Image (cartoon, rainbow, N blue to C red; front, side):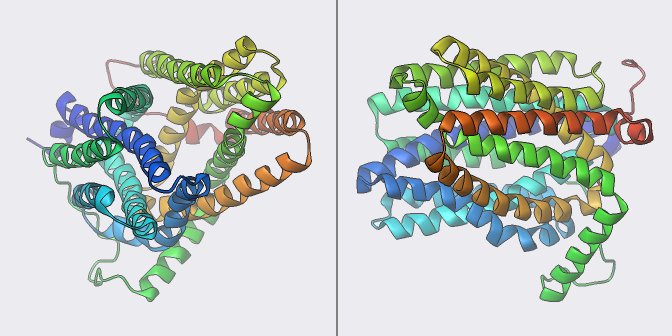
Length: 416
């Protein structure tokens, strides 16, 4: 059977979704458990805060060269290898005696994740036919949202009866199980980037790859403009998220229990939105999923910023959670359809590096501004900026000259 017929079969995509889902559930278990483990070990909030710097720092150290590896080596093997590496590193975390050792170990875990993410993106593009990508991305969003609810719930139950160490070991096992599932997927041949040239990573190779990324960015300016605008909106939203607990506890004067309920209901809204999105994705135009979805996410932030009660704050966050899946699916599909698979690893890693640097700057800057001005005023101002940028994003897809970027192939049994 030809590979195209093989990977079009439902179980191939189902296995890939299963692998991603199990890995994401493990990630959420690990996120909570490692925070508690570090806090129990040190008693220091600063030590816990240090955990949040590790991931973007690892991204900066990895992504300037990882794209060169991803595009030249078998992506499925890279995914399996990084899953196994993460399983081993996570498993040894609880036995490390010093905090600095744990930070170093976590740095390598995050570096492996920085390779896994672009490798999985390239593999999805090569595995899933263009006409099926939007539906696949919608199901992937549902898988991620489900993990957001299931992972913390499992962790909460486990921590009632066991220790954070056990939760971390389960995370390590989830990486191994994810790697096992990936073995059942087809081993797609690598597209030769530089035929006849050694695949050994060199400074010259990395330099040439960055030149190639810049050349593509100039030639496909509109694609990268939409991609960067989308991620700018996400960055501003993430900066708001970094202060949400302060806003809820101090500005709204809500209890820790009410904060926990808001977070849980946001997750429920995200799952509900992802489920509806998976049902409607086939029929929704890509430009409206991307631009309209992001606008409604921004409206959710605005409602939260003007809220004065638990009910209104919850409504804002549930709207935000509900529509985030639509915009995420829209961007993932737009990106997959407009960036060549043989360049995607380098493009994703290069722009991922810039995004990580901006992420660090945005969170620190927002924290400083929030100290100097009223947090509600800052939230309101940034929410208005988010809405204006979302209108720009949506408007960029409505121009007649850009319609070709949003065209989608259709299978015979689901034409619009």
